[in-house]
Each structure stands twice: as C-alpha cells, then as structure tokens.
Image 1: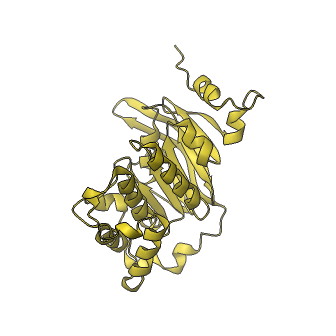
Image 2 (image 1 turned 135 degrees about the vertical axis):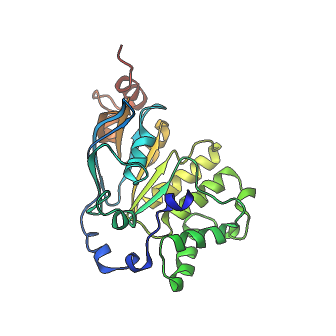
Length: 267
C-alpha cells in the first residue's frame, strides 16, 4: 500500500530528457472540471484549479468539504469520474508514470514504516522513486538537511515524536525533487512548536517547488499560503489570493469572518 502511495518510477524514466522537457512552463499543475462520485453520491462537483511554479496554494474547508478526496485525485490515488489533471504537462490518467514522477505526496496519515530508522526508510523511498544508486546518498543528505533530520538519521521512526514523524513524511515526499508537493493536513495533531516548525519548512519548500496543502486552519493559510481555494460540500466557493480573502469586503483583517461567510451551510 505504501509503495502505491510513493508511486514507483522506473529508473529509466527518472532522469530521462523527455521528463524534464515540460519543466519550463510556469504552470506545474492543471486540473479541469473534476467530478467524483461514490455510488450515487456526488462528493466533488466540477472543480478546476491551477498551480504555478514557486507557489503555495491552500486548499481550505471544513471537515468533510472534499479536501482529501480532491488531494487523492490530484495525486493519482483516486480517479475522477470526469475531468482532467496535468502535472508538468503530462496527463495523469493517460501518462501516469510520467506525471507521478513530478509529484511528492504526504497523505493525512504518513506512509511510514516505523520499524525502520529514518535513513533506511528514506533510502527505501529514494529507490522506489527510481533515483540512481550513485545519487541516492546525495538525495538522502539533502532531504535530511532540508527537513531538519540530520541528528535523527539513525533513530527508529516509531520512537520519534509526531512532529518529527511529519518531517520524515515530508522528506519522503521531496527526496526525488518533485515539481509539485501535495500535503494533506500536514500539521494536524501537532503541538504549537511543532506546527511552527512544519509551517516554516513548508514555506521554504515553496521557494523551490509548487506546494498544495489542505487545511481547515486559517492560521496556516495566513502564514504560508500565496493563494487559497475554498471548498464547501464538494464545490469550489472561492479562488483568490490570501490577501484578497482577508479584505474581501474592502476591510482588512477579516480572514476568519470571510471564511465563515463563504462556508455557511445554506438551508
């Protein structure tokens, strides 16, 4: 199951020229008219969104709004009933291997093998991602450094705090240097100090990658997101910059009030 989340990329694909040929575009992700049903129930209605290089996008909404379902579609873990998704120009349904080579994904429950030490787990993740044997060591060192895990590399994952386990989850998502990083509720269950550290890490990742994170925490949005997409009952009800949401009615400092108004349940 965890290997499916990682998305195995054959070595012959990882550094091939045709993989990087589409990386000059400003758009790294394009999703158009996504719809998803479970049985007779439609849970996602005609959602479209785009992600630019070097941008942090917050997917915001109450619990049950459809954030995780949307994330699963964007990562190829769940197929939409209709609509298209392109990652760096590659169609996720028609060219899944090529598209997934550019995705790093941290689901709400990190795909960790807790009996592994941090270093061995990340080496395993690097190999699943198709990183060449002679480049695994440098990829490992970079991921450990970026996620603040250098002094934990020989520690068993199961003995780490939840905050550090989240760091390991993010490290596996970025070890292959993907263009798009998708994080589902990355700070859920963390204490305030851990939340601060993870938010700082995500903001730093946004300078070199495109990042989408789902959250229902407005503080998360205000501190790290450039743009916001708000979901309510599977429908996109707002798309714009964080500053635009903050002063939607012409008055600054109204982020919480505007979010509540946009997500009010209409009876």
